[in-house]
Length: 320
Image 1: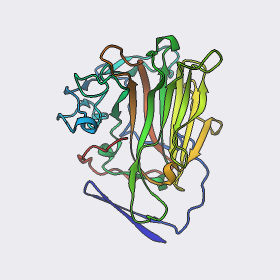
Image 2 (image 1 turned 135 degrees about the vertical axis):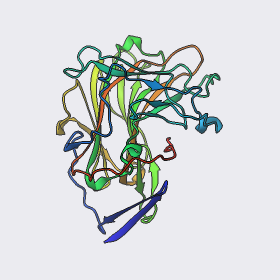
Image 3 (image 1 turned 120 degrees about the vertical axis):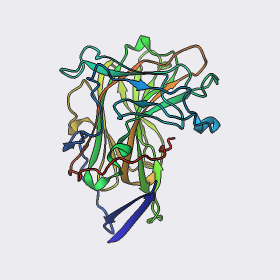
Image 4 (image 1 turned 90 degrees about the vertical axis):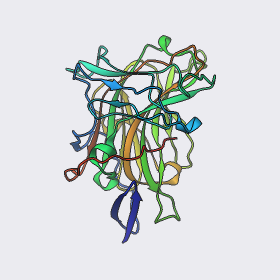
């Protein structure tokens, strides 16, 4: 046995890890106990996001432009590395959504880089689910965490006329690489939805791309042939693997919906820190990104965690 110590943002997390960890069975996202302190259902008709514009773009020009944007219910925050989407607004749930759902969240941008300075190259905006701030700690993979979200895909003819990534559901995690047992690093796995505008006559209009395989490469994991509602999920098992799930519709995920399992970049995942959503656009000052609508993002743990301590403020987690 060895003791693994991680000191970050003033919080000491200690976990006991075995000398070797065998591959565990994948965890179906949505299994176990729902963490009601995080996530959102957008059912409150007064749901409001306070943008505090101009948004940050620290990853591009080192400008934080504080205070950061936030949702009034405390469940969302701006990513100050790249800034939130230009539009973060509650809307009526599109047809075919979760039974009983009356509200969902619209994400869309025009300038996805430095505010007021279109670059003419593809860039992205991010918004965080605010998990670590609300529970006051990271979630060790020993608890079997997972995250699920429903995503509405607009009819393909309404997508921004641009090839490549359009949306992503991602996580900030920490892990260790072989040969660096006592050191951890952050990384950012995720499920991307790409527009295959240059697909040709018989190709799928869109595809799910996984970040990332063990060597660190992104790859197309699943074609998307129908628009409408999809359910996406990621889980983080005690053996350090990350599992990716997806299916059309809003039904709960099952074992049959797994599309990939990896240790991205050859990291052994140790902690789930947060989840976030990317909106990608051409950033040419003229076109807007595809409208993306999400509903009921939720976090679960197979093994129930102790009651969280009082949430504490932390520096924003960097993204890539």
